[in-house]
Length: 498
Image (tube, rainbow, N blue to C red; front, side, top):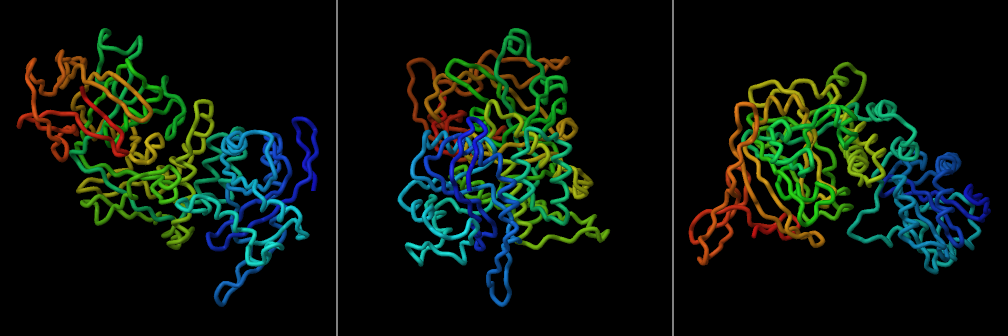
């Protein structure tokens, strides 16, 4: 076949394949092409829906126990395999071309590409019925083993998501939501409950209009006004959510571009009541892809032990749906979680259209009607999700404004300054704190940090104390006296207080 590049009109011969992976239940597009260029990659992206349609017309049946499985039952993954002898651009540029469209490419440019390109097999082949002509024991799917063995090669996507990634810039959120929402019919979620007393953290950098000189109110530390709310991971424009973190160290990584000399306010908020929340992105694939160093959280027991299992039972009762089997439910959660946790660059805000649609599909389902939490009926208050910028080693939370007003209380605020930032290591200090508020809601700053300070000339023995105080601060002992704010984040990066 011949590939015509729209950028320069170049024509390049290529061969395409359907790599059918019955082990992981998906299909990958495969291509062989000489002297791979960025223009070739763009052309492949433009024609992917057409390629998938053409390859789907070929059906292969593979024995599976006493039954047979058809390749048409396998969804297309958002990953593809490309064989080439050389590239006209850097590998990073090649791979980035696909990543900006929500695709992941495995690039193979070693000698094995020649065997594949010179083979006489048809353009469509199956990993289970065709072997490499130079090595009969090796199937076409074997190049997927070139990946880091710690990262599972499985499909984090489903056909609708693959199509949405290619059309994301042109679609509106409502159109995306209409396609995603039906996927959750009959799904079962296992979700944590935020206990009362939990301390959450929110940060806001100083600006010309937000600083202590002008006075800071509690409302300015909470969710923003609708007019100042841009499209985000959970929210539409002009529809604010309260974005916060479950650990204070996450804040320093979530606030984009913090550097030495910058100052911010870190506010502490406490849950007055248990809060029922959804969770998205807590799958092993997402944790492996982001490079998490912590195990996947497991919420067990009833709500008192921080978990509820909630089926989408309304549609099941009305016989309009059925509960999804365990494996199918797991694949759905993994596909949606992977799409929701996509990294969004500075000029890629359009990707939030998909994450918002996924969040709304969870929050607007019939299962989001009132549930009994403790002894009180409650709707889902928001979404818990792992932080991308800390490689899933911390947790973020987005809460509905009405839930913040009803279930959270302000505890205190700290005026922080970044002293040094080197890579992932951040050194900061507390300059001031406020734990009282005037009658008109203005923070009353103390003019000093809250931590114990040794007198000039004194020395002390510093010892880390396990756990945190009731406000969520780290604690240390200095000559037996309790102090605050020394420790490490969950990735082991230094977070120091001078």
